[in-house]
Image (cartoon, rainbow, N blue to C red; front, side, top):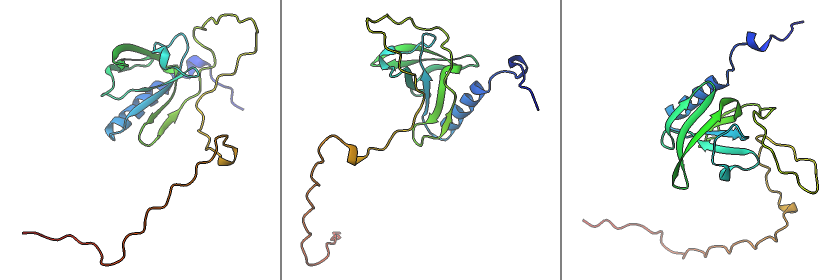
Length: 172
């Protein structure tokens, strides 16, 4: 039986190397690299675009300025709503990197402990917090459970006129 090695004996994380490799693969093949990021107080992104503690960022060279894919942070400038913003993402908060065009890429575990917890205001009714969710597959819509009434099928196109097959006339 083997015992797990101490964290310092395991070396550095492979995550930044895999992120750089997949970013290079995307750009070499003409794909647009996207990163999905778990957002907490240690992440510097436009918070108005964060949904469910997650944001997806285009990290292609056309969408960024001064992109640095470091071992600790991914840093760049990008435009959001017409204004340039500084973006800084800890590498351990990247939960996926993939090509926009075909979805090929890699997912990583969501960080278990937030680096700097955000203090939430205490509400009058203290309900248990909803658990955070990482990446998940989209569920196909089941028409049997759809609450909106079904729309009638579109009318069929009219039948083409019978007769000779249409052809182009060459004019010299």
